[in-house]
Image 1 (tube, rainbow, N blue to C red):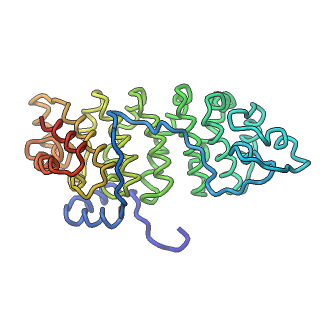
Image 2 (cartoon, one colour):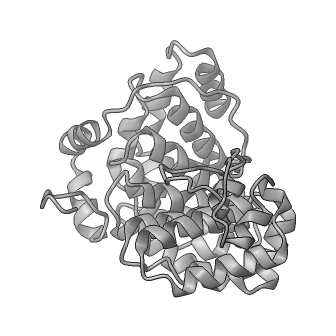
Image 3 (cartoon, rainbow, N blue to C red):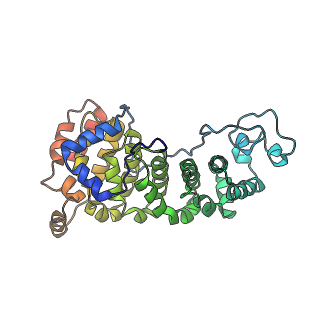
Length: 346
């Protein structure tokens, strides 16, 4: 940030876990950073996907005759006479983009020296990628590695638009086979970016889409500690998105061994509180319900008890404070939360 202010990051996981290990201190940090406005959001499924492909203008100026104006679906009354390509598509909607338009966008993206132009080209490609025909054409043009190549771009707004474009492209199963290669970079963006930033949100949305089915979930088995650590320091929006990924992963029995062994901050239990947003709490209870459905053998349970600060000890072991927290939640004013808690306890 240009003003020299200190922005929280998740770059040092051990240090972060040290910060959040103390319940009192971590709760204060959590409340200080989150400052969320509580909103209700019910009917949480066992696994989640955003289900809506993002299309945005993002504050970018709509230039008459530009590709962005066309893809944004807004009427533009004039076009530059010398811009034949833009003139052809001026009144069409994103699903009407032709192959040569996408090819031109990818070409201009690779040759642009202006961060604002790169951001605009990626925004346009992302809007176009909300449609299956364009998802396929961008893949066939080898556009996925081109777009992913801007994940380390120096400009944050370019990185955000690259994530948003990949998120829409990820709605296509064939595209996921290429996008999965960039999971390490996406996880690094979450870890190194400012807490509650658009970069973290875009990265989590992409991981949510990629983890809807169990095909690529194994790529995230080392990320559980990162996700749990983000959960206790982020705002409501990021908490919801983080839990969508955790719910998806915990819906797969084959992932459970990795999940319960992951290091977890004890302060995650502080989220089981009436002051926590119902939208967060319902997803958190879904995650816990998935964990409770897992039944380790006596030998495995003994081995996990010897792993300090692992998720099993924090949330599942008999010595955990989880049971008491759940009993307290039976008196929560939200009826659906009461029902979920009762289901877990019984």
